[in-house]
Length: 210
Image 1: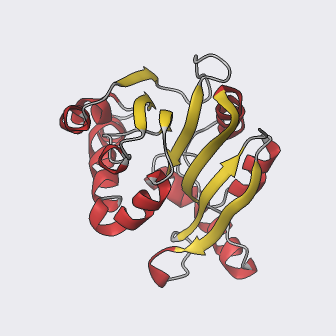
Image 2: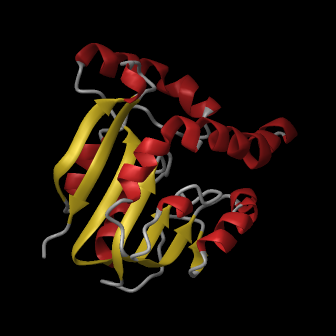
C-alpha cells in the first residue's frame, strides 16, 4: 500500500465517514436503528462510536467490532459519556469470538456494505444472537429499480476504491435471509428523498427464530 493510500485508509477516510454519517445528516436513521436496542449489544462497524448517544437506557453493555484503530481512539469521549461498559472485542466482523446465544441485539450501521466477508459476518451475527434476538441495520443496498441497480453495478469498481471497500451493489436483504434471518422487517428506501445509486438504503430489523 502506498503512503498516500495508507494515509487515506487510516486517517482521512475515518474523518470523512464521521462527517458524511454525522447526526446532522443521518441522525434520524440512527435513532430508528437504535430505538429497540436493549441488554447486550454487538455493534458491527463501531467506528468512533456514533451510535452510542442514541442507545436507550435499556442497553446494558456494548461489544464493539471495527478494523480502525483510529476510530477506536476517537471514540474515547463518546464511551465516557455513555457511562456503561463498551469493549472492543475484535477488528473483523467475520471472526467474532463471542459465545453462541450471548447477545440480545446486533447493530450494523453502514458496515455490512463494506465488510469483505459479509456472509461470514452475518453467520456470526446469527450465531451469537439469543433466540428471538434482532439484527438492526441500515446499509447501502441494491435498489429494486432496474435502472438504479444497473447504475450501482457500473459505479461499484470506482466507488469501492474511493470508499475503502464500501459496496452500493450488495443485495443486503438476500444476504441477511441466507444467514437464517426473517427479513420481513426490512425495507428498501432512498435516503434524503433522492433516488441515486449511492443513496439507496436497506433499513429495519431482521429477527431470529424464538
